[in-house]
Figure (cartoon, helix red, strand yellow):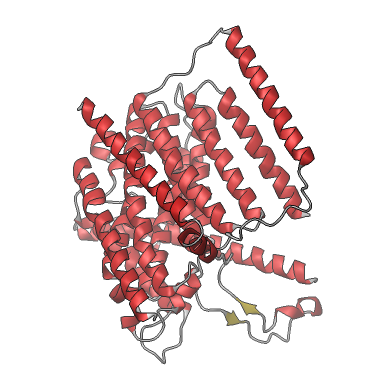
Length: 350
Length: 162
């Protein structure tokens, strides 16, 4: 194979692996969320389908496939159809520029046929695209993902959907600002927008992690990130006690499944970013322990559990409380953090 | 080769969606087409080797500004435009478009495209930052004051109605 073909083959392989991993993680999350929530509420949760209910996601998937597609009367057809597409596009594009572990070499594979010989000992970077402006790109895609919800809310021609969409738009652009600002300190410390560089800047002892160096930014990002993916306590856009299901009230069948999937993938993206930006990514936190994708997965698992825990614990914010927190607490705090960090970086870099 | 194909795809998308923005009677559809236009422009910046500008284009225009537009459109529940039958206005618009096309054409013919000097190297974040804080520092500060005064003006206008 020519070098171009080799590169292409590797890229396709990486995309396949990442997509399947995300699909498995997504279906696992739906089950884990229901089971863990159930245990928090002294219930059992779905445990009938397969051992420990492990086949429940499969059953849900099959059920959703065979459900009837409902198109509400007076809905705008193209936009109604387009919303789930935009949602899933944004979710998968954002996660494509994030690395998952340190670069590694494939072992020497002598049994391979000659035309695959280039594979043995090849260096693999577990990341689909390494952009110079990595974090900015994620932020840009994040900014676009709000349209999926606004589109869904408007196109369905339903009052509940519209209200959900409006709330979502207001919430997203209030918290996006705080979210972006909370990254600035980290970018200044690492001197780069590349996620890989930011992770490697946190190597060594765990007090080099941005969790310690940028603790206010960590809190701001955790809160703003939860708000961006619209999970409890920030799930006003779909607040079921007032708005039925908010922006996706009218969606059924696979369109509903796609919207759900985009939400979970976005949540995974936020989790991955917290791990990479604040918790040292694939570094263990003690020098001498080799960096590995395993540490990254462990931290990610803990964070995803944290999101479910939040959902089992907290009530929903009121709209004015949400706005107060975003504009009067998070954004000033983020600005202060940037000024302090900039001062310290400028002072010590002399 | 693939760059050229991508350029034509995105350029076509940008022009097409820009036409929809003007031609569409429903303001919400216009707003969404404008988002498509901004995203295609961003892709073209990316093809020109300036990922920083491309990301900014999406964040600022397609992201922040258009969300506000849509929010206002949906909140005020703007209805689709009804037919306007002013022939004089349509004629005047036509003449303006014609003049614009002629002007663009003349500029393109006169322009020495191949030997155009390279613009300021502001494609990387570091260079953009240096330019902002050295050569363009006064322009940059003036823009900040402009935005601040617009902010104050918006608050004053909004408070009047409360």
